Image (cartoon, rainbow, N blue to C red; front, top):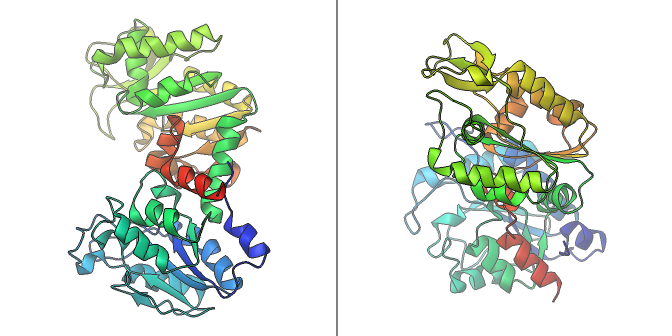
Length: 397
């Protein structure tokens, strides 16, 4: 993907003395008192900010936080906790600037954090007048927020249209490179794991991947629907009977290419959905009418693990069972460890997937962990994200 990279501009000494506006993703979880409970996104944004400071720029950073009402700022919407944590991590003062759209005072070597950009009227609708005001604040716009790359908003898209220079920050560039490596130029076999509660939310992803991958592993409620499509009984398990034809289409599309959607041969069932429910391993052909399928069985998990260890590229989105419950975590744990042990290039994304990665401590053994949820899913669907589109267009002049 041909975009201008901020790292290249810094290396070419094109940043010194310039006003740099960085759109970061600092939308971190907070408790009821506003305290940050997990700061991964803040930490991930620091390399870009430090790169700009080291290059001698006057640096402005903004982000959204939560879902504020445009034009109605409340204390809970404030990036004050973010400014405080950023200051701690960077060992410097980080002033927080409100009402910044009409002008910001910042000198080379200085860093300011601009208040929650989603409070600005016209942000979400990508208002042109707002975007032009933002663009006028800077000499260089840096998009470094992959988590918002699927949204065409004033601070992510409009500003990129009108800024003198628009480029990709190191975090966004790394996402682009990893996605290209995994989907555009994959080492074969390419195996995708798509799991979740509903086929309907990931149907377009499944259909898109069916034309690309060598193995399509489905899990969770999605696997139940595919089991039903394959003629198996699933008891009272979560499934979408109205999408059986779509599931059959995906199976047929894979089969036509000499590929497959592995259907579980054994499963772990329970009579109730609870952490203390009694777990029973049984053949996939022996599910009772009052059974809930809450995980894949050990035989299925072992077979999938062998496929993953032999893969060239792995794309992972979603746990394959109710891994939050100890009795139903074996499938997800087995798959996570197989991905970690595989020599394949692996890219993983999605909130539940990240929780599983953290639970099994395999962060260092994956090729790339995507910071975006919705953006990651849209890329898997084969969509061109607005951020990639506008940055590519700007790079072409």
